[in-house]
Structures are given as structure tokens and as C-alpha cells.
Image (cartoon, rainbow, N blue to C red; front, side, top):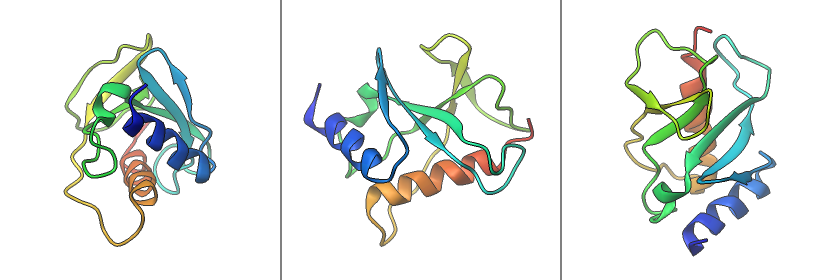
Length: 115
């Protein structure tokens, strides 16, 4: 595994989101504070191939189970059966560590979910 992907896994582990590698995805759990899944952990993922520039460049695609639905989204099938990947741009990091910014971004994405 590339060092950047391993760093992402280490960063996510430090935040307690329980990352696991499944084939070409890093799957982890985030609990959103808004939206249809507020208060419940949601499995989400990122492609290992998108982590080649971590933490300088955030991943673009967010992988989620198809049960997580949005009113509007640009999505494609995920490599994980029963999942889709959603195009979600993050414009840049703030002042927090990149892993904290990433988990905040995912919570925001999940806050848009309607189902």
C-alpha cells in the first residue's frame, strides 16, 4: 500500500472512525449530526487510488451505501457492491489537521442525505 494511503488510515484511526481496507477502498464510520442519518454511524469510504496525494489533496469521490440518498448528486457505481460513489468537491483545507477537515467534510455530505 502506498505511504499516503497508510497515512490516511493512521489519521482516521487516530480520530476513532475505525478504518478498514476492503479491496480498493478504505471504509470507515462517521456519525453525522444532521440529515436523515443524524446520530447513527454510517459506513463511508474512499478509493485507495485517490489517496496518492494525501494529505495535500483531498479525495474527490465519497463512497456510500445506496441506502444513503441525496436530493441531488452526481454519482456512479462504486467498486463495492451495493454502494455508489458521489462526486463531492472539497475546496481546500482549513486550519484544522487534514483528517479532522476530511471527517467534517463527510459529516457535512451526510447531513445533506434525505434517506
